[in-house]
Amino acid sequence: MPGERYFAVRDRLSELLGWIGDLSREVALEDEPDRPAPVLARPILIAAIGEVNAGKSSVLNALAGTEICPTSSLPLTAEVRLYRHGGVESDNPVQEQLVELRRPLDYLRNFDLLDTPGTNSKLNGHAAISEPFLEHADLILVVFTAENPWTAATWDAVSRLSPQALERTALVVQRIDLKQPQDIPIILGHMRDLSLKRLGKEIPIFPVAARHALEAKRAEPFNSDQWRSSRFSDFENYISERICESMDRRQVLHDGWHHAARTLRRLENHFDGQRRGMADDSYFLGNIEREMDALRDSSLLAAPEAMGAALERYRSEVDRVLRNLRSRLGWWRSLARLFSGDGTAAEVETAFAARMQEVAIGFGRDDAARLVDACNQQWESVRPQIRERMGIEPGPCAIAGEAREGIVTRFVARLEKAVPQALASLRVRGVLDPLVRRRNSSLKGFTAIGLLLVIGAGACGTFGSQHIALSLLIAAVAVFFLAAVIAWVTGSRITANYKERLLAGAPTFADGLKAHHGEAIRFLFRDYSGSLLEVRRRLASERALLQPRLERSNSLYIALKSVELDL
Image (cartoon, rainbow, N blue to C red; front, side, top):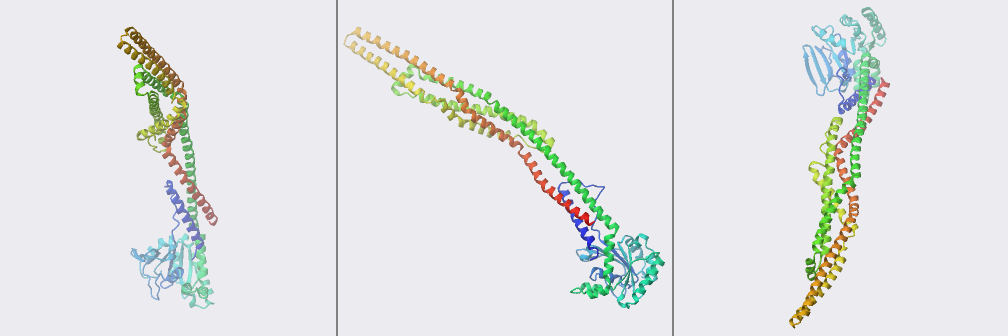
């Protein structure tokens, strides 16, 4: 096919422009309304003019390699026919004496062929229709027959062409196979003389045998002897040179190349802007994360102060437990338990453990609520900044709203786990039991002595020894009074010792909660940092999309540089 080098470069450049356009649309790069992409796929227009039966259709058929134009010894072309590529074969009248014929022929993807009635045709009007095509044709073929290469009508038609059209004109002497070889140089000489005389310049002249060229192309295998005899090779080489050296066509390719290069530069600027924007966004998010970390660190530093509230609750619960213990160590309740069994120590210690669990829960809920409120307050100040800076709606705080109760529950659960360990470190379990046992043993002895004295007084009274009975009764009262005093003194002492032990253990209890309290704070802020999860995901997604686009842009740039070498 003539012009293969041109079409190869054009197709590569068209493909690159398509890929660059795809990438531009993918990243929503705005078009340049004043610089539209040049149309590279415009086919080469080859127009054939000449007298009736000069062989115009045969020349076009030989170029196409198939009989797309009807040929006969009788005139067949009664109107101007424009052959173009189409998926379905169709004949479409455009206007009177102008028909557009679509044919599914690969050759027509690159060439439009214009077949005209004879310059000496009796039909009127076709010259006016052909003239605009001739002025814009890439190549005008003026076809003569070898039998009569000096027909006046054809030379008159050529004389009417503009100087610009003449630059794209070639003379074709058809059917040279009907002439003797020695006659051909003479014919060509006469035509050169006519060209100089009629046009003032020498137009390229090609003697051909179009029928032989067509048969050689259609032969299986290709008939090289017939091809040489057709002398069509020089003619097609000339067409290739005209196509490849055409300034208009080269300018279109250059315009396409410059459009592609300009678009790639715009894409590069766009990607650079994206990279800078992402870097700024990363720095911006880093500042927000540092603010979150600062709030977390300040919360951890303030944890001992927050634990002070837990200690206050601890001390108030100690007072409540001690009141319960004093009540249980009273004289009458102690006396009653001498006969029913005394579980004071276990009950008090169990109540103390339960109260400490409630202390941890209450403190945990209050402290978690305080931290959630602080995080939510910070987030509400950060959220509009993200919206304004990045154009992303980050949503509500991850630990506020519906998620708040779950966050508080998990915070409290971590503190609850620390209570048994903290109580164990106090070493108060089992402290009361030996003290209460010793006290009960003393009280049992005094109670037994008092009861024996009462029984003795009763016996003496029965036998009439009133003085002895009275003495024994007074002694019994004294023993019971002494037992009551001992019960009060020992109860107060046990309560005081237990209070001292519990109050001294307050820092130990706080230390037992401290590690779990810090862990609970860290987990709460980890959940709080999830507020940025959607923003981080969007930024990571943009980064993931940018890298392959950069690689595509670089590949397109390298491919475009290789096309530049061909240009």
